[in-house]
Image (cartoon, rainbow, N blue to C red; front, side):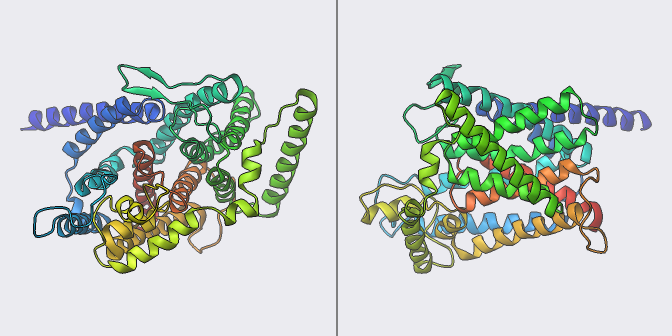
Length: 430
């Protein structure tokens, strides 16, 4: 009996090691090779589910996800067919099958539960963060090659299983991605982890210098994308990470920004090249912002929501609703809260919002506040948890003013960060 227990423990330990290794390899490959990364992450998820012994329904968040899954399936079922067995709302070929949209949600709810096994301790989250840091480097290599040396793609490997797009004639640097906004989101999301890696090293040495250089390149890369979303995410993520530096932070920020613009002017004068793309300067002008079509999209989206407020129109419905009356094609509402409300109704959207808000508040208290609710002094050895919270907030914010979630790399990261925040939130309160 004792021998069997020991052998069972060894088998589980080996399985966990394989799952843990597969998980971090998947995170490392996520940006540059999403299909192989998904295979590694799926293997780690299956192992994690196999190793779970406690009742997952003991966690109220998991119960909430189960309810949300049921409501999503119910919404698609109710509005999929009319009495003739044909699509009721989906007259346009532009929309995909409603149930296909569930793939973006329900499997990722399972990943949220399973990935928590590999993010239980601060050391686990640091390892994952470092995997993500090294996985970001190909974005910089391909992006700077595209922007500075005209390395245009797409470049394919393994019969198209791996594609680096590096598109020509776009508004900004796309790097590995199909669109500049995705590249900007990836860089802005991982930037707080580069901050964390910089500050964890107390001594000024070559490693700290290299990290500082890479931080500078990541910021430049965000500017090269010409993405307004990326620019806002950069400032937001940086501000959150440095809570509560206050005056010192703002002084540092002002000096850094002033130095950057001075450096840009010097490079422009000497080499006739600017680090701030003209596209970005034009896109953040008041006239450009006031004429942004997404304002009209958001207005129409609210109208769609109030037409079917409770269970929505079903999955992948926005494209059919919008393109039925408009000549300019758009495939989504450019805001994930609006998109969820349109597809699955305000009940589902509200429950998901409550879930995310709960995780953010609980983890914020652990990371940034003392037990008496005073701000923890910057410099305490929790830099990577600060980075984790900042990265999660950035990726959520990016999807609030746009929708990047339907790229598997962004959606996986979203639920990965939420899984990590769940473990962080348990460290003091549960």
